[in-house]
Length: 226
Image (tube, rainbow, N blue to C red; front, side, top):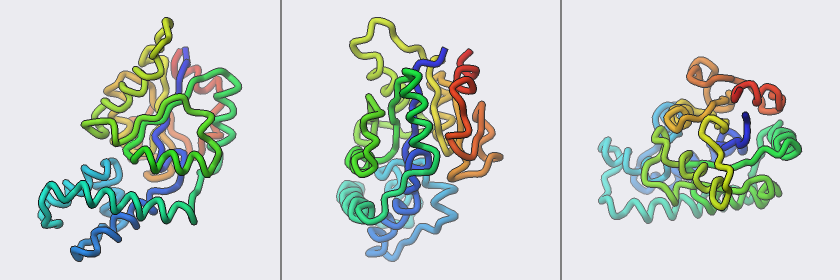
């Protein structure tokens, strides 16, 4: 039985991955470092901001002390928020899909590697905050995807003050990356992938793959949890 849908954010609800990359590169430019689009989607897209900067340092591309990374994340967040004010994009089909879930009393949450301030800014601009009971962001977890920590925390919060707890296999996770799909599977949840960031072949771990969320009906979702 389907009782909840937990969404990744960037690449699922909003088309903002390229804005994240631009913000990363503006921070990295002071060290003459640049992440190419190809490398970002191949190696870094699934990481939190902290994990991305740490990965670059571990690879020897970014020669900084670990304690400086917190300041880098702050700079990147400020740049990203500034860019969003002029360029905030909700992916086509998302709003209709959210309305369908709401009309069928399916509870909704977000589990994202983005910072809470970034997520809330986009939801506010798009007037979508009303759909989501729970938001789990990079600020609140120790391990990013493919670790299941974020999805398990989202489910825990959905179940707070609810005597009829939602089980993992009563949840569908919607993702756009293999890192996220691995996290959802590890959490014991069902999976749908959208081909906004990667092609279907790279998302083969998902139980269902679509080009747009509004291709899915409530019956399609219920069948995944049957």
